[in-house]
Image 1: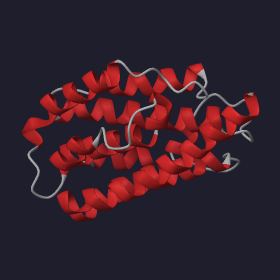
Image 2: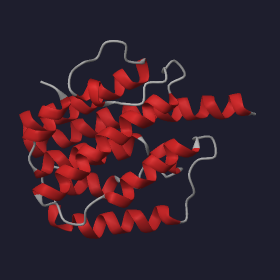
Image 3: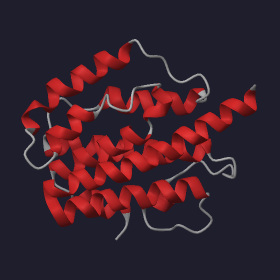
Image 4: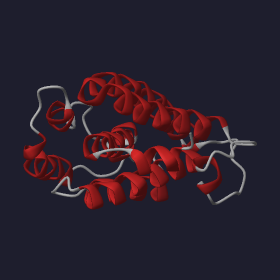
Length: 188
């Protein structure tokens, strides 16, 4: 099933987890602490209270407000990551969170395309999201697999899949942090 189809079928918790996972993987671009999103993850987990989402997202925005984008990130990629956080809905209604999760998916794939040194000039990430994956740069292909895995985990396990989705996201964050660090060293 394509990423677009998985997003269309996901429930509110799955969509919120998908959007949060994309944001989490792009956290190195915001120069944020790895733990800053933990309260949001906890709220989506098994016994978490998704009703506190709005308060928790506001707290995350406050914590990251004084933190500038990572110097090595590249302006466009860092801007896309900060827009993901800014666009997070305070309410996890299906309509709002679906729009956010879809936008986070696109932004995260675009960020990975911008940061992949082997990426060509292709500007659209629509084809991979719809299942056409030929010729994808490696960093984009890995991000696409992570996004699909997160949505499949939530579809299969519900709230019980959130912890495993966090593990997938943490791995992706490490990869992106290494890419950002490598780019920073090359610019010096």
